[in-house]
Image (cartoon, rainbow, N blue to C red; front, top):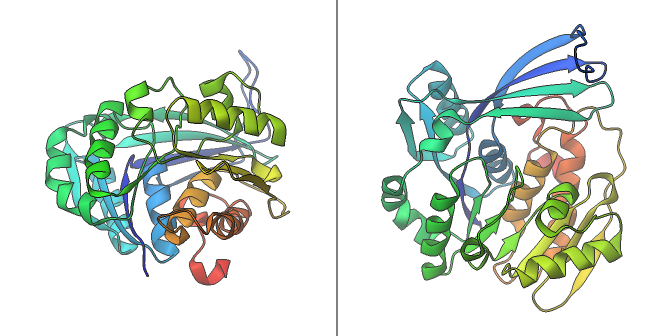
Length: 301
């Protein structure tokens, strides 16, 4: 069965600045390259899901500008349903990425139109939410809209997946609506106060997130793999595939989209879905850019 996935999220134009290292305060450095591509955590996750075969739809907002038309065209070309992407008087969101030679990145976000998604957008998308298996959201759009979308999803049995990035405090009411939360190790530490360094600390952080209301947890650990904890008390660490990373932009987003394309509603195939998603991420980090790096199901398999 093909999973139906909805992404409520951000649409950004990414400007990537290639640098040897991050500049010190007051220091000026030359860039070795400058590139622009489509991105945004929402767009990345939706495209990852679509390229892995999920029937994918999007709820979001872009500016009434060239960049907005560009982002809609990018998603449309991936076969993603864009009928619930609205246009705003605010400019299309943007991300500015400092990419170091090591492959690590630092990112600055301008929310723009992403912050203008309103309840009317959800009302129009309600039939689509009712019909989906999964709805994914991040923190690059208004939290109150995510909560309302998740409340709608819960009424129809659609599973809710929260990627708490960029990390911030989460209202307990929102956490009560989360079927699966997927932070990375940094985000898990911010949300729980527990420094995530190994399987034991992953377990403690997961139990803390469950205690806050989430039903299930996956903590992504970069090169160390991914730790999962289910409400059935089953847990484990799935190792990552070892590769030479050149750009980690969109690695986590690729993981989430690929995971949702494979995951069963009862999470019974969680291990296989994580392995598939990890393989997708391992391919993405060997390429430059966000959307251009995301692999297809044929490449992953």
